[in-house]
Length: 307
Image 1 (tube, rainbow, N blue to C red):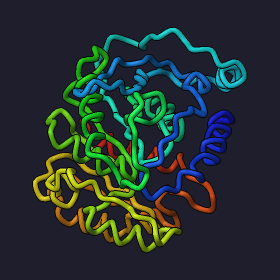
Image 2 (image 1 turned 90 degrees about the vertical axis):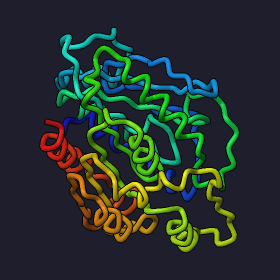
Image 3 (image 1 turned 30 degrees about the vertical axis):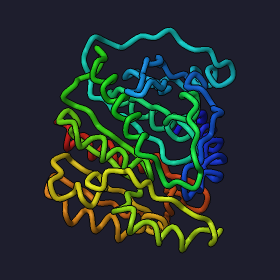
């Protein structure tokens, strides 16, 4: 892994440590913009059905930069003119954030890797997060059903882009972003693969788990009453028809291994389950995330299932 990647990962992890959340925890400030890694990107104009702006970055497939180019980008971050390597429509990965932070965290690390392997990548922020439209949230909520509106708007916008092979979409999310990805993807045949880190089964099963590990035993965590019950992972699994890669930390105390195993058992589509040894809900092991291993395993899964 190159020097600049190590720096961004280190700085990202400093933020990830503060992202250990049990419910909604928006961050309006970006720690980095993509130009810090020399990434080519453009903003997508994404508006929800209820009139909100969803800040979205579109990263086209692009060649890896040299060590010198990365060093220059890190020291002198200038946004590059948007361009693509060719006119080919390419498979595209949509990355969904969890319930905390924004898309300036590990999303940039994933975007760097996957665009260098020939995929387009799309990242976005939920309403009330990052530079998306302001939207008042109760931070005791585990999620809001309105986030599915945001996700749907992003998918529809992505399908309209000339760089995108509309028959080859992937959704990838962790924690809250994992179950929202599964719910959003269920409505689209265009989405061929689903990658999830730390996927819960249902709110009813997740709630007591979260209460047990919460540092504040008196905190009133709230399950969204209007969230579609049929779009919870355990309910979707029996009829799920997309290639699925479930990743879960062996030490995950928020969406424990048994949850992924329970969902995996109900899946009839192409599927893989990876229990990552000695890692927690954030994929951290001794304060670090092994992005190299994660990226390689995800890419291996995609190479096998996106043909």
